[in-house]
Image (tube, rainbow, N blue to C red):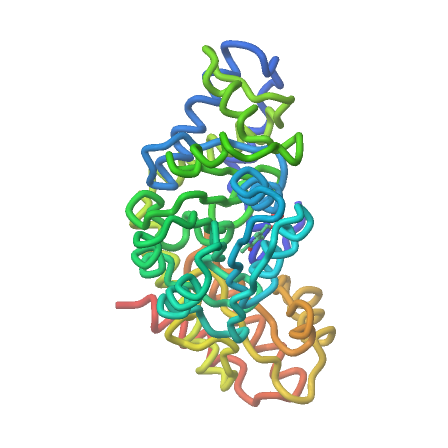
Length: 381
Ligand SMILES: *Cc1c(COP(=O)(O)O)cnc(C)c1O
């Protein structure tokens, strides 16, 4: 097994329990046995979304669920408001454009979060807006958007509220029904700590009403087909699902339930706070505004005078810790620490040990241990 510690915003380290679950026999996906596992896994998924509505598993990565979220509730030519403060906000907009939907960008400076007031203003300015997209946890910048507060604003408008919780569900607070989210999507390989390749989506009654009115402009991700198959006894998926990944999701979601969602979210917040403190202890600077800093990924400015290749290459090849780089114009300017999934002080001690030793070796700092000392302080009473 590769002993490099993945401290990425996905994929994250998969627990042996989940890996072993995937070793079960691949059964007929049109059988009572698969129906049972699908039913249980979908229910566990709905619990994780904190919704009374049905959750659907899609075989595909998180982006597949993002595409389903857009293409099923908007007709070509209809207008969507896309909140864009990073790579994934931008992806929602690009998906909408690919479907011929009229996009309007609500641009947010990368590293900062959208405000409920800005959303309200944009909606008031244009009554043709049929839906808005918000990325809860903008993984490219390490910023968490106030989806609960935006949800309060959305209650006064007919526009559907579409939220990407791919890198937050199971790591930060996501209450789909309470927050008034109409379409919510997530992925397997981030905070849920399953292998990559599965995604999930849930739709509110209002969203389903709209689905009925939309002319299908796609085939594989047509949610009407998933609903029809899911309503059968035993439930099925319209096309062959990844049976093995269904086992993995089942086990990963059981682990989420055993830990308790609230405990899991608290564990992620603790890791985020500890990481932010350790970054500062090393004399490094956060990229994101600290008050909106993510619970699952910390973005850090690359220290002057060293390259991304030297820095991340050393943490990985010499010290066994894989960190993420920046995307697009942030490439080389930031690095990102993913602290999502099955992580606690052990992984953070190793991570900040590797970062400290690397920075010392590259001549950025004289004392390698300040980050480790900070993590130790955060976790000892
Ligand atoms: C990872 C991620 C996605 C989906 O990416 P895939 O590579 O398709 O799984 C979408 N949104 C956010 C915020 C993400 O972090």
